[in-house]
Length: 585
Image 1: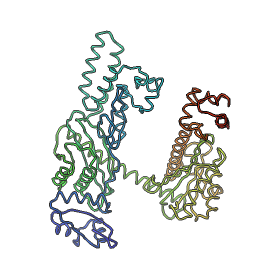
Image 2: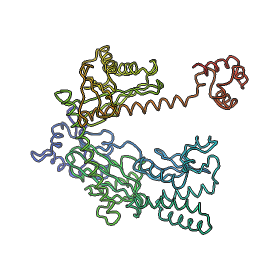
Image 3: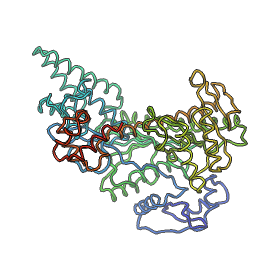
Image 4: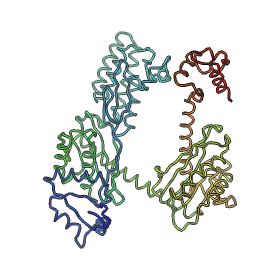
């Protein structure tokens, strides 16, 4: 279905085309969204396929390519993560996304990186298998902190025998394969044997490992099933839709994930489920397939869906609805999670909307602002200064519009100059016709920062917008902020329970967090950079030879020009440059 500009509005399939189209063009009984669609339809085109399976495959291809606004759209661009166990004498456990090119074993997929981190954290506590990068592992000369806090046996410096490490790896694999009960029994037998041989330290270590595993089994009420299963529940209400997916592999629940599809004209649970299943399992050829799907409602076209999966992926799946025992608990849990997740999402959206309305009342605006921007500065004694810009709308943070600015050419620690540079760079683009102008501009700081922001807007002749300075009160505690509206003469405060103040605090804190994150990353990058990198004529090989010759940067810094010139490949002139660079401060 196309509008008058030949933009694609909706794609659908039908066994009976006349009946399907007639359901849209009847005089009464149309849902509001369907009526909105019909009001825009200018042209309908049809494509005939050999069977319903081909129609389903074509429908999903068109939806994926064109993203029609009146179709249910699943927003899921990331590939699912796996646990990766590398090859080698001392294998490493890590999170992996993407193509499986590296040699080793892959376990999963997990529904989220958080689920993997939880599993890896447990394995690290129980079996001490290393999780550090291979480059870090190869270059260690003494044990790291993980060994000191008893999370690793330090294979990097050979404090563990390969046979003992291999046994820890085998136990980790048993856990990842879902054989927790068998693993616990094996560890129990080993503990009893060690105690009989009076090896009490080893027995105590085995006891702690068993306790960790038992704790996980107690928490995992869904343990005990079998097979590879995806449990999917769809739930809708007038505010939107949610689909909750639980991943079960080898009878063990690996985790879950919520999806909030963009609902178009389909408002029935079965239709949401149909759209989700087809886009999710037909949309990516790399997505791991289970052997069974457990759903809370069976879509009408489920047979065509299964045929399409078999055709496209070469795998047979089954769909179950009426289940018992463990599978029934999985199903009920998925339904409960879908309901709660959608409720929380809608409540949060309404909460943010109420805060925007309260802010509009405080600022005496005719209607709530649609775009708020807040700026903050972060540095460590003037080092690696970074300015942040965060953006909020009535729906919450607009993270795609967040920006960071690396501040250069200002006096170290001069927050006013840093703020001036950041705002100048941001609003110069507005003057050039790029970007969006905010309704309210918040500046984290007091009178000085507010005046600086006003000066920038005047210099660039930016149209009038509301300026709001947020200064910490005399106690510097949340709830006692002093606010400045447009200029320092208009000073006011809000009650600690004011929704408008809560919104201001939320945006201010987010700007602060975003600035600190950028500053730490920039500072870390600077400190990882060798001071020799700025010396002309000193490349990676000469840096390596210099540090090897002197035993480190500290000893090199102590050396005289004559001593530096004695290093391999270093001339007197180059030695002078190196010395000058190291002592430039």
